[in-house]
Amino acid sequence: MSSMTFLEKLLDGAAVAWKALEEVAEYSSTRVDATELDATSFVGVDNLVANKGGRIDATYLPNTARLTAYEPGDILLGNIRPYLKKVWGATNSGGCSGDVLAVRILDMYRPIVDSKFLYYLLSSDEFFSYNMDHAKGAKMPRGNKEQILNYQIPIPCPDNPEKSLEIQAEIVRILDTFTELTTELTTELTTRKKQYNYYRDQLLSFEGTEVEWKTLGEIGEVRMCKRIFKEQTSDVGDIPFYKIGTFGKEPNAFITRALFEEYRDKYSYPRKGEVLISASGTIGRAVIFDGQDAYFQDSNIIWLENNERKVFNKYLFYFYQVADWNPSDGGVIQRLYNDNLKKVRIPIPYPNDPEKSLAEQARIVAILDRFDTLTNSITEGLPHEIELRQKQYEYYRDQLFSFPKSEEVVA
View 1: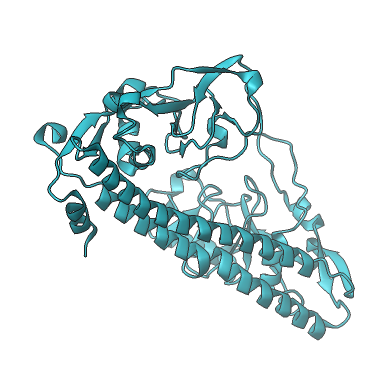
View 2 (view 1 turned 90 degrees about the horizontal axis):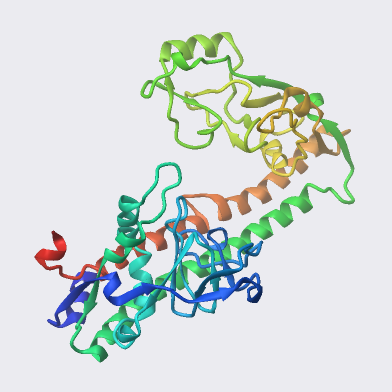
């Protein structure tokens, strides 16, 4: 049975009234003294969690004397880009900063509008798109408070409050089920990541194991691609050119195949399996080169050309996650220069027995591979499951909110 059929059965022919948000709710007009707030009751955009994830305790308290008060059942909206998609259904009383709007159901509509139902409406992609379209300001757009109040929301069976709340409650129940499942999976993923970090750190500490600390400069040579100038790139092309901002993501620049083949043959180029490292921005972010034709920004993306008869590339990859990079602070952003990289120390197990050393490295890699697959793979394990549940939730949410619209609302 489709969700749309379910909605039709749920409505059972009942009418749906579309009303502007301001007919049903208002912005909180009450105030609270900042001295009455603490980390659990103050809400700023920084402690609203993205994608309707709730809220976390504040890490700072406001410096203004009085703030907008919120109460349980209010819907708090982040009101400054890039926080417009942060939404929280308040479960306690407190105060919020000027970058957060507290939407409160009018007293006369409390018997007919479920606050959780309104929360789901205001956390939808449709509302987010509406809010973005009407945001004001160029550099740091804010939600348009007047236009937000004009947003149209559906009230099923408006002439029968009891029936209306039953319909809303059933929709909320279904969406809560998907939300709770996603929350459980996310909690499980967080636990798995903590386990992964724990075992990784334990395995790479080598307590009670014969180990020698060597510098990366003793392990191999630092390499980078030949410099590519901006005029040599284009928005489309044969070979993706990865810069520090797109490293490990989707490329937004390309070079010609002729230039790629010339530079690949003449200059340094990574071998399949070697570990590329970000040398600026997020220092030490590592990506294993998959061997596909691609080119990489010089000095910002580097790698260690090492002898795998002594140190496995995959062992380096996991070590890079815990390495003490000690980057230079000379400019606007931190940078990992070649000399910094060469001085980084790495533990080599059983250094006087190459065969035993490689066997121990392989054992560590095999254990961490299993954890990595479970926690980080997008095609396997928990992240993939969470992604599927989120898509499922969005599908059913869209279907459950596909209330019939009058011509006036469509217009």
